Image (cartoon, rainbow, N blue to C red; front, top):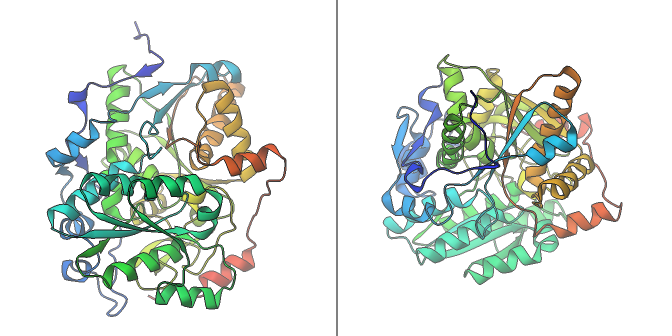
Length: 455
């Protein structure tokens, strides 16, 4: 007899993961290495140490160890808000009249409002262990900057955040949370850095992008003694830390003998998606199981669905290493849509390789459709979702309705990366009927891709 599944599946505190899972160790085709833009050769530890914390640089280059111990100090911090619940969306299932079983992993139960704290506390810990004064970073919608400001406050580190200008203006309360935790927040591109001034001159009046903000944060870190740069997505080290999401999800499903058929995550740089799917993708690459994994991205920034799989700069200012990834070109400035955390020109090398090898599929969705799904979810399930998370909600609903047509009782799992309570300007525009969709032309994308380095 099948176990009765509660609305919320909680793990015990003792079941919080004590090791991160490094899916690269099991991948037959490893992600291509980062390249030093000056030499064109794979980055070494010596190349990365001036920018990243020493231990994080080691994690970035590690594609052989499947399991990496989580320091006790980080596990203890996780206990403040983890384990995160896996929720059975019974009310949504009833509203959709679907035979599908829908589950979501809710990562919004902390002040930062998102999954970003999982990596922020790890990166702040390693910075403190190295004896650094502080760190610099970028943030899009503001979840990462908020999470890092919290983590830095906990370890008494200085925190400097370059926030994409459009988000800085649209999300003033997210900005103030960062400042409350002691962070300095600067709209990007700014006039405080050489690369910021260059971008402003080349793109007058630009609303900014994550690629712009990354360039400024890297420059700020390398020009201040005792500082290093930390990143909230894209890098392999970040996806490694975020595997606590997938490990907890799998453990919760296993408790009730539930095997997911479809796993869905929003995709911008890849941190949430990679963290959620890594344990399941590991089973796939080892030939143990098979799942349908769907990455969902905004139509306005479709790196997987319309980008090219090439080496490209990770930032607009072209000061970072080159990564082989699905990209729209480092100079691509996305439309100022409201899923700020997904406005990145490229995709994680891990996610890109898994996608290229056929282990996952990708879909791009319109902004207005995303907010329609978000509104439906809020009214039925009682949580106001972040715009980023709502991309996954949109496709989860689509898949549940397909089950209604076919009569299949599939198990659908998606990542609810966080809450949308600081995204009310976006919800206001949707409610007022003035939100617009944007889809870049083929010519716009090709013009941007033409500037990718020839590697």
